[in-house]
Every structure is written in C-alpha cells, then in structure tokens.
Length: 235
Image (cartoon, rainbow, N blue to C red; front, side, top):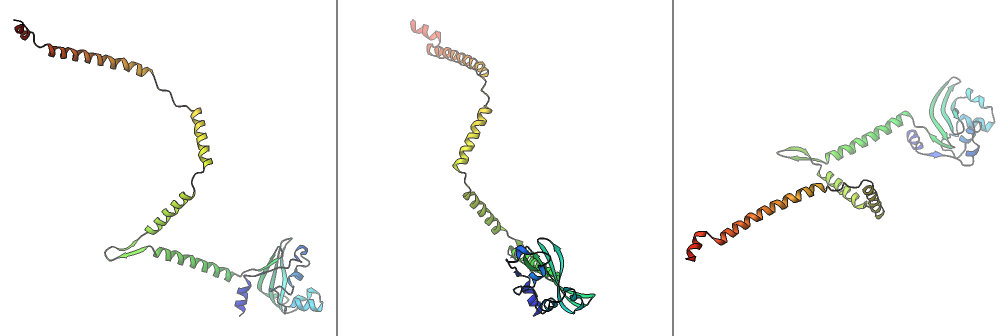
C-alpha cells in the first residue's frame, strides 16, 4: 500500500494561492505544513513541536519522521526533504518535495524515473515492430518480402490533398505578373538582326529568275518544234 500511495503522489500537486505572494525562507515550512497539503504527514516530529510550541532545534534530539528545508533559491524555488531520524547524526532520506512559484510537487526517485523511461522505450519499440511486421509478406516460392505499397499510396494521397488545399490566390498571381513585367522591361529581349535577311533575299530572287528563264526557253522550243518539219509543211 505504501508503494501505491507514493506512486499516486507523483502525479499530483498542491498550492494555496493566499500564501504565494508572501512566501520566503522564514515561512516556507509553515506553508508546507498546511492541513490541506497531501504531502505533509501530521504524525511527524514537526507537528509535535508546532503543537507544543517547542524550539525547532529540538528536532535533532527526537526520533521519527521529520521535514527539513534542504535548499533555497529565492524567490521561486524551495526544496523540502522528508527523512527518518535515528539519532542526532544519523538520518535516512525518504522523499524530496520542490516548491516552484508556490506549487508543491514530489520529486520522483531514481527507480520511478528508470521505470518510466524503460516503459516508454518498450512501448516505442513494440509499436515500431508491429508497424514493420504489417509490411511483411510471405510467398511459398519467394519467401518473406516487404511490401510498402500501401505506405507509398497513402503518401501520394496526402501529397495530392495538400496540393489541392493550397492553390495560388489571385493576389499571388497578380504579384507574379507584375514582377514578370518589371523583369521584361529591365531586361528586354534582343532585337532580330536585319542585315542577314537583306543579304539572303537577293540571292533567292536571282535563283528564281534564272530558273524561270531556262524553263521559258525550253517551253518555247517544245512548242515551235524542230525547223525541218516546218519547212516541209511550207512546200
């Protein structure tokens, strides 16, 4: 039962808003010994000295559970230790409590920290193993293989959804047009060279004229026919 109670107190905190603006090194133990504080044991030696109005220095001569102020970093941090005193020189620490900005927490012990980290690590390893095993496939002829088709399809679907959800706005398109217009004015395209065209055009015209003259001579010769046949017709 003691282990269950200590485990449950690791997840709770306590504070009294009326005390918080007035906290200092002199009254921090009175604040910690409030009745509503679940971390305070009323059967401790501090409560006996408080009820009997004795000198707090007499804690060193008593045996049993007591609370001491272990560390102070004003105005925000105070550390209180719960310990079992066996003699004026021999004590056994039980637990530590830190007070930050008036809120009291129980400091976890080393066993609780290691247990929490190991459970978290095992959970992550188990989830990773289950996810990896879901992609394994077995075939009698091929054996075990990996099939990540579902994962890639899901990734493509997510990318498509993102592209559909993020179209360009009218403002963005107008700004792009303005930037392109400025760049075109600043860096105009080079003008075409006219000298090359003027040199090529007369060459093409000369070739065309020569071809047409030859073709006309051939066509006229074909129409007139040979001269011998015409002389015979005249006789």
